[in-house]
Each structure stands twice: as structure tokens, then as C-alpha cells.
Length: 439
Ligand code: ADP
Image (cartoon, rainbow, N blue to C red; front, side, top):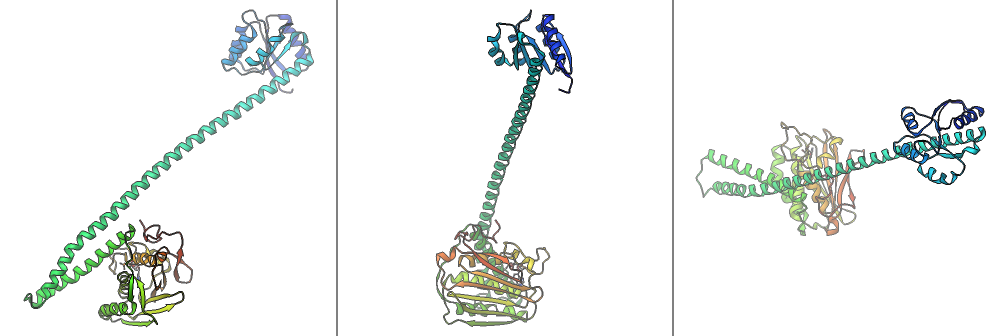
């Protein structure tokens, strides 16, 4: 043992103390040895100094070894304790060990070899115990830390859950507000439109040229407002999953020709040519004609709105899988690839500024996207900035409830084309989990 050990010998018998001292010295133990002769002095010595080992006589004048050990252990003094027992005390060895003695030795067996051996063992055992206690303490601490972290995580989880609930509630209230407001505003708007139309009937009112012009403006603005309100109402219905397709058999060619006839004047006002090419062997579709019309009017009015010169084409044809493809192509301002995904999100426009050139709610494509999804169709977009865009929808000829379950998910394929991919995980309600409807 290389280090110098601090050793305390507690014994009232001077001769016995000397025997221990000599035996340890003979064994070559490098040590500082201290001696006390009673239990009281032992306690105060151990309170003031840290010893590497204590040799303790079992029979002391003021106390016995068992009591002393219990006192020391309960006062948290941690030191290897070797009890030196007299002849006949061996039977109490078990009690001593239980009370916290590290080892015991009969005084009759004290020799340099046994003492040195016992000293080494006691110190080794004690150090191992200390290490184990330290590791235990560290384990306890990290366990407590884990518990605290878990509690903190749980608290955060509950907070997030609460915030989620609040957000959901706020979103529900917002949708409800949008639905109620747009619904309520439609009634007076219909009255404004209706009465303006009556006023414009030549036999009903004798209006001056200027008055007619003003009423026409009221009528046109009223119609525009009604269209915006309808968009908001549709969107809130889609969001709430309350919009259902009312399928029936209709002639797609007729619908397209009617829309083109209605919108031709808008194109002509901007000097745009509007070309229609319908290649259908069978023009009949089983779908919701009102929603189909809404999709086409939206695509066509966007094409006209975002094109300053050139042409707009509508191309319709049958494709494999008993489906129909309708493409609306323009030579307008085009869309940058980075905006491809976003323009299908509700309220998103390429130009989000207040001073933007082109008016609109930013809901059109979000609604189209949801409707096409409900129909089990796909939307494709090809566009080049400054050159033009092509929005193409592919829908089944016959819309069935299964179709409605297949809702679009768009991805950028790196070639200027965004195409929808069917996502089997989507619900049949257009609003739920839909990639483009931000709630
Ligand atoms: P809105 O037309 O009311 O702004 P939409 O949802 O219909 O909303 O369209 C979203 C955005 O997509 C538009 O604001 C525009 O930036 C872009 N966009 C749509 N169609 C075209 C098109 N044919 N050419 C260029 N940009 C378009």
C-alpha cells in the first residue's frame, strides 16, 4: 500500500493499542496513526478528521462497540470499521456486521499479517461501497432528472394539445363566420341584383342614359360581389366537408359551348382569341354539372384575367380509363415553378400585395382542386413565366363515391410540370387532410 493511511485506534488498553501499532508498522503499512481510549473521543475524532480505517475495541469504558458503530453510522460518518473483539465475543460478530462494521478480528489473532490483510480488505470494501453508493446516488439523480423532464414534456404536450384545441376552435369559428357572413350577404346582394335588373327593363322605368349607366354598374358590381361571396361560401363548405356532388347525366359539349359563349366578350374586350376544340365521341358525363361548370368558368376566367395578348385554347378529349381531359391553355404571364404548389392553397396568389394588378380572392384554384379531388380526378399544370400556362383536368366520365375518395396531391417533377397523384390515405371529404386547403 503506497499511500499514507490515516488510522485511528480506539482502545482503552494501552498494551492492545501498542500491539496494533506494532503489527501495522511491522507489516510496512505507511500510516499516520492516532489513538483514543474511549467512545466519546472516538466520535469527536471521527467528526473532525477523515480516517482511512478505524480499529475499534469492542469493550470500551464508556460504551460498547455495537452502540458506537450504530451511533457513527446514523451520524453519516463513513469509514471502514474493524472491530477487535476479546476472547468469547465472537458470537456478537454477526450483530456487529449488521450494525455496519466492515470486519472484525479477535484480539488473540492480531498479527502483522492478519491486520495488514484485514486493513487492505476493509479499505477496498469500503471504497467499493462508496463507489457503489456514488453510482447509486448518480442513478437516483438522473432518474429524478428524467422524471422531471418527463413531467415537463407532459406539461408541454398538454399545452400543445390545449393550443391545438384552441386553434381548431378558432378555425371552426372562422369557417362558421365565413359561411354565415357569405350566406347572409347573399340575400341582400340578390335583392340588389334583382332590383337593378328590374330597373333596367325598358318598360319598367324611364331612366335617363346616365341613370341606366349607373344601374348597370350597380348590377355588374353586384354580380361580381355575389360571385366572390359564392366562392367564400363554397370554400367554407369544402373546409367543413359539407359540400356534396349532385351527380346527373349531362352533355359536356353543351356546357363548354355555353360557358365560351358567355365569356367570349371578356376575351374580346382584351383582344384575345378564344379557341375551342372538342374531340369527344361521347359527350355525356355523369357528374355534377354545376360544379363542372364552376371549375371550367374559373379556369377560363383565370386564363383571360392573366393574359394580356395572344390566345386562349380549350381542348377536350377522351383519354384512356374512360376518362375525359379538359385543358385550358393561355399565352399569359405564366407561373414560376416555385409558385406551382402554393397557388392551389386557399387565399394564395402569386402576387400577394395589396396593390396587385389582378383582382381575386385566391380561392378559385383551392376550390377547383378540392372539387376535382372529390370527382376522383387529377389536375396538371404546365407553365413558363412570361410564356403562358396550361391547366388540365382529367376526370372519370362517371363520378362514383369511390372516385371521391381519391384526392389530389401535387408534386413538382422538375420539368415544369406539376401533376396530381392520387393519395389513398385521403378521406372522401374534400376538406379533410387535403394538401391545398390550409385550415
Ligand atoms: P384568384 O384568381 O382569385 O387570385 P385563384 O386561386 O384562381 O385565385 O388563383 C391563384 C393564383 O394563381 C392567382 O392569383 C395567380 O397568381 C395564379 N394563376 C391562376 N391561374 C393563372 C393563369 N392562367 N396564369 C397565370 N397565373 C395564374
